[in-house]
Every structure is written in structure tokens, then in C-alpha cells.
Image (cartoon, rainbow, N blue to C red; front, side):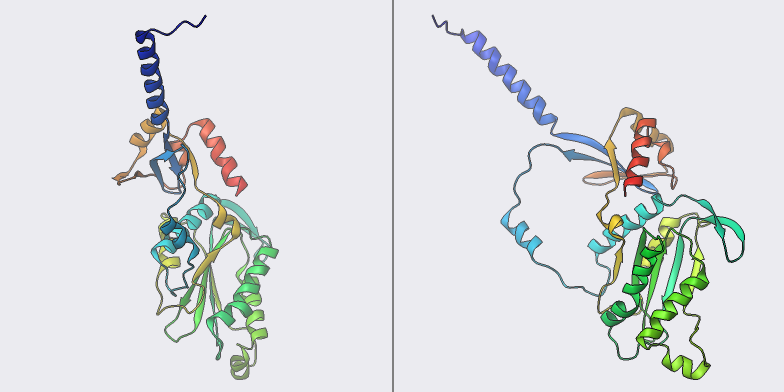
Length: 300
């Protein structure tokens, strides 16, 4: 025999369902701590079911934008991420220089590649003949992580800045860059005048001694140059492009540490940015989080 529920029981069940629904809704957002090289972000992340994007958003994703020849705001954001991850992956280390037979400190190398004469070739042709094979050679030598930027000089020729975290002697870099220039015919006039194919076309220096290394790299890799570049402005290694910042669920312990070691706090509409001592995520992470952070970097 069916026994009906009393009105009080029904009311209680409805109330419990309402409370459970509210609880689940509240759990749709979780507080996230995101680690960068010299700052941390705190924001809320939605973990509920995702709504399908509006048609206008889909249309915007489908439409591809042509290169503007400059670093746009969106490109600058992606470049900063690549630079930050490059630095996070590159702790200071002691390396051996086989040319000078000495040991010294190394973290990031900053390389400038200059064209002696690109003739009538376009920037796209220069990329195809020189930079693309040079980057391929870098990868062959074991350079896994790099960020590069094209910049137009006053005299109208292009040159490139590249940040790498593997030590390669400047003579080797210069000889290889000159080899690609020679194959492209860019050294013919120089050789006719100087009787050799060995111009000083590269500049290489380590920047491990710079206090604000991220700001330094962003300054030199994101400056505008003398005009718009008619081609690809910048790029990075695939692993840096595909990788994400390390993120973990925020804890009360994290909050206490952020308040203790924070040098500056900026409250935005959707997040709070904490400026921290560069390269010291251990100051705000727990031991378990620090272990996960190291695993994250190794996986990039």
C-alpha cells in the first residue's frame, strides 16, 4: 500500500534539494593560484558545465587575421607567457666552455642575428633562407626552448633577437649564421670588398646577472624597431607555445605566504596580481605544490 508523504516531509525534501543545489552552484567556482616568474595571479575558475559559444564568437575564431607587422596586444600576451616559461625552465647553472676551457654561470643567452645585405629579397624570403634553417640547426644541437623576434633596422634590413637557455659559443653561432647568409647570396658584396665571408654578424651575451631578467627580455624582444615587419614578427619553440602556466588550487597557507612575501598587489576586475621575488615560487607554494610545479616544468 502506498503511503503518501506528509506536507512537512515534502517541504523538508524541497528545502534540502534547494540547499544542495545552492551548495553545488557555489562549488562551480574554485580559487586558483597561478605561478609566473616574478608574480602570482589569484582568480576564480569555473568548473561547471561549459556553455556553447555564441555564433559571433565562433565567427571571430574562424576569421584569421593577417600579420600586422607589429606586436599586437594579443601577441604581446603570448610572448610574455613564452618568456616567463622560458625563464622558469632555465635555472642558473655552471657550464663548461670547451673553446676557452673554463667554467662559468649561465641561465639565458641573448643572440642578435644581423643581415649584412638581403638584396631584393622580401622578409619572408629571408626567413625561409636564413632564420628557418638556423632555428632548425638550433633544435638539432639540442636547443629545446627559445623565443625569437624580428625587428626592422633603420637601413631597412631585418635582424633577429633570439633568447635561448642552452649555451653555444658565439663563434659557432656566427659561423653558422654566416653560412646561411652565404648560401642565400647575402655576403657576396661583403666578400668582394673584404676578401672573406666572415662578417661580425652576430652579438651574443649571457644575461644571468640581470636582476629583472623577465623585464629585460620583454623590453628587447617586444620593442617596435624602425617599422612594421612584412612577415612573421615573432615565434617560439612549440613546447613553450603549447604550454600553460602552473596553476593550483589556492589554500589558506598560500594566502598567508602571499601576504608575507608580496612586494606589490594589484586588484583587477577578474584577478589579483601579486608581485614576488623573481624565480622563487617556493616562497608561496607548499612542499606538495612545489613538487607538482617542478613536474610541470619538466613536462614542458
